[in-house]
Image (cartoon, rainbow, N blue to C red; front, side):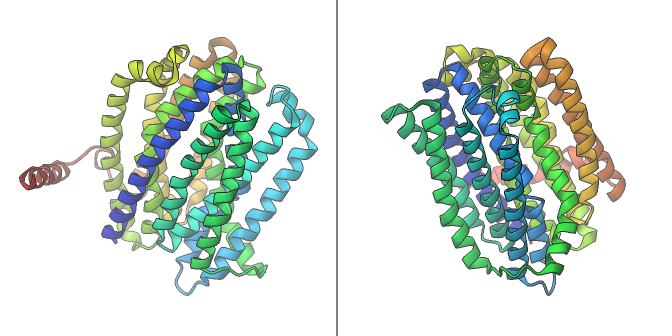
Length: 436
């Protein structure tokens, strides 16, 4: 089991690393070829797409993994129920978006044309079903399919953006249209391949639908609140009519610091299927071991980024985005706290307590939203960054303390490398150097 987890985590980390390179290249292209105002609008549309994606997935990503791996479960039926519930949820979201088009345009899109709302929905739908496809692939241990899908998305985004901005010179609208078309082509390809491998039954099985929804609901709140927590700042900036140029500066800082999430997200995606099939008595120790190794590498990566950012950001994105370094520095601790929370929260899902994660997230989001409405008008993007640090501190702290109580493991065992871990690293280094 440990070998399978290590294989999946390492392959996913490698994929995410390469994906990050292409994603960064696409971000640089978009930032350099769009005005600050258009880059701000692009960030708002992308954020709405992410929020719509999370609203539409109704907790089915981890629910389908949980229900597929149960002894005696019908895998095609579990997959079918997850797809059916996702389709129904997204249809409702699209209906609500069109009913409230004027309100969304006036208060979030800053008066942009209705086509931008359509593009946000198109991106959200593509991401929602692609995310479900990824979860199904993880559940059947086809991380090769999952990784291929993940890698293709930033490559397609880079190619689409280059086509729209460099060749067609169609601006922010063209970049978003080309990106949405590319995402949908990839969705049709990889979702079809995944369903072919997993099996799929469109049966509208009431029992399967009810049980999937009951399990997924609390976890859905957790996932939705997590994403709202991550993106609320940009949405609130737009709602408060903050200068789009300021939003662009903030978005660039966030996009750079998000590179630190490559390894945590890779580990988290491989960890849940492993914990779900592990004897209950082993899940706590395994989670603690993974977490303390993650903390070690995130701290090292954050220190390296802090040293490089003052030179790297203006070099890659242009001198006008040198101001992005300030929110980037502030957000570094928030990214580390988010990484810890994302790993430890898998433990509560694996033992059937996703509701705990949802409760912690709800409180942290409430703090984040309230403080953002107070801080952004007074301190702008710097206030938004400090608000994230505070709310992520609350979230990570509560999650780790609850994990400590549930497993009787100390904070040191969960967050700090042990002597045996250091000896293991030393042994690996000696073998590597000896082999060289």
